Structure formats: C-alpha cells, structure tokens
Image (tube, rainbow, N blue to C red; front, side, top):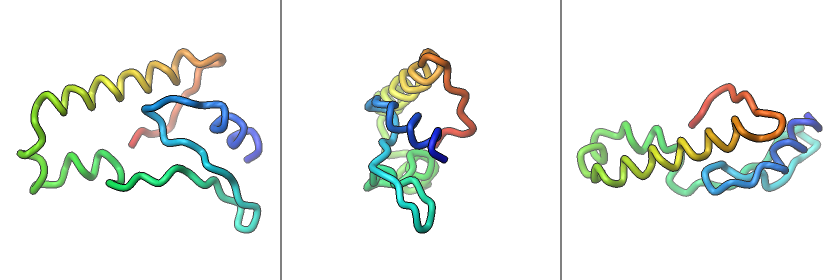
Length: 84
C-alpha cells in the first residue's frame, strides 16, 4: 500500500487522476474528484454519444495516448491494470 501511494503521489500529469491523500482507517487511497465521472461512461451514454463532436473525440484520444505514453516512459515504466 505504501509503495502504491508513493508511486501515485509521484505521478503528476494532466491526463491522470491525482492522488489527494490516504486514510488509514479504512486503508484507502483518496483520489481527485471527477465531476463528470469516468470518461468511458460519458462516451457510451446513448444520449450523449451522438452529440460529442468528432474533434472532441480525437482530442480525448490524443490526451489518453499522452497519458499512457507518460506511464510507459516513467522510470521505471509503469504497467497499468486498467484505464478508465
């Protein structure tokens, strides 16, 4: 847990959800609040899907690629389990 918290604290990138702190009881990582929730839920919402301009979808893709590149080029490289 300590190593995970230290690693997440060191990760500063605009495309990653930030670590705000930890709690010991219960043992938890406290992450930045994302007002609109997870991007995948936003993108698959049928009511919003057709209203998102293609340019914005391309920008999302570019931002995600930059964040993944940041993780993979971190020293040592970070292997992630999932992306949201």
